[in-house]
Length: 227
Ligand SMILES: O=C(O)COP(=O)(O)O
Ligand SMILES: [Mg+2]
Image 1: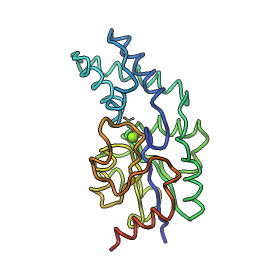
Image 2: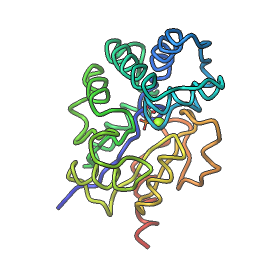
Image 3: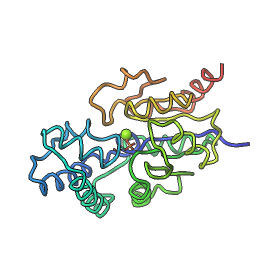
Image 4: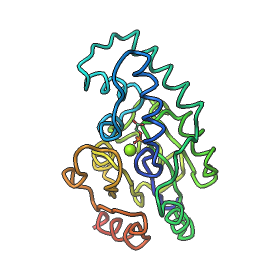
């Protein structure tokens, strides 16, 4: 019988990657002659991967960005960011204890992120967390990505999880929309990267610390979904 599964978003949910994303983004903006982005701005740039992050940063400064320049800056970003992994990035407080709790309760864990798969596995590996995840699926793992619900359902399938006993944990509208479209309950963290409060997107539950993500809470959400 397949096991229940908790599927985590990565940036802004499981790992606080903002300082390193910002350093590498600002490296690129500097090359392009733009102003540095501020930490608060980054919250609205992240969520759809590196390419969109650079596009949004240019848009915020009302600067045109031809496709070839975007391609070059993305390559620069990936080099810079990838070369700095893990940098200052750390799991959020209580995240590892939450993973332990679910593992002890027989759950699988996986990651479904719009970060590139290579950067994601490299970061998770550098932090020593790889053995904890049955699958790590990035924006380029499949031919579709969040908010396409198949990114989540295929992550669950690859991990060998039970789609009827799966929950998503995320920090953005993208995660919430993805899970809802897949018919999977979604717990939103309110400490991640979004410029609008997650409550606006009506997740199944909101938590402010991973201590609140208990097995009981998740089983309650799974039970409510099954009714
Ligand atoms: O890096 C991004 O833009 C998005 O990453 P996430 O899906 O893990 O939040
Ligand atoms: Mg995120």
